[in-house]
Length: 419
Ligand code: PFF
Image (cartoon, rainbow, N blue to C red):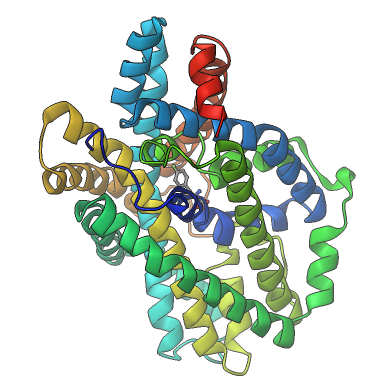
């Protein structure tokens, strides 16, 4: 990343940040968390956290990137020396890059499941399958380290190649093609779900706000999800912010990102629950919602195999545009710090992430203590990694807000906020 790298257009940062924000968090995590936590009440807390905490931190994180024009670690170093702030603020950059590295390692494994389901759907092999068969099939996938490693390698390989091709040729061109395609697919899936599913039941489940339905864990999940979905506190937004046009408005861009991201989660949630309720299935299935309940809903619907396949392509594409934003902060650091080429930097990042991803792969089989239920969150290395990032995200976010609010020079903040 050189000082002069800037996205080709004023609006490209918005495109890239939406690409980062919209991902497994919207299509997989948000619907199953809402399903587990009573629907509307969860969404209320989620939306309020995005508006009150998410957007300000999004502005602050982008500001740090654009003010430093460097990757998060080197960028923080630079801002600390130019602002004479205490060196412990370096932690923002390091923790961000570390969290990005950890998240990508398990994100890639889960995105790999979607590759498996795309094949299953298009081949029609799930058409007419029973709940028992689909559930056993999911368990069999998780029980196979070789399959999981294959998909993890494929997904990570493609992410790394896109970033390795460069900021303009790889990331920007990739996003310009993938993002419109994803929105079109989401619309197709939504229309299909509205026609074939129970739209009214889905809307009433997601938009009946009864706070009594929400446990303490539900509140925490909703707040954690709003950080995850906006890609906050993990260096991704800072890294993309480093390439942001000086003319683009931080505030307007952040609000747009939050609105589009929330809309995508809601549209996907409405579509998924319409299909699930339309087939008389349960909402509170946990992480298996997308990989067991939804395929089961598609299995019995006309054109379900085709639409199911299309839906999983959407999941892979959305995950990919998020994954590339997780490669960039660490790759950027290698490029700036060790003066190595971009391809070398992404290979290094990719290899490290691939290895760490094996911890997640084995958490579902050889290191899993429990027999396979769809409650994936027993005690295993994956849980530990996920837990670590769940702590790092809000912590990183708070540190970013504090740093921009206090030690960073007011003139610099005012100058950045002027656009
Ligand atoms: N926001 C992405 C999602 O909702 O799937 C996940 C993510 C991407 C988190 C990039 C963090 C990040 F830096």
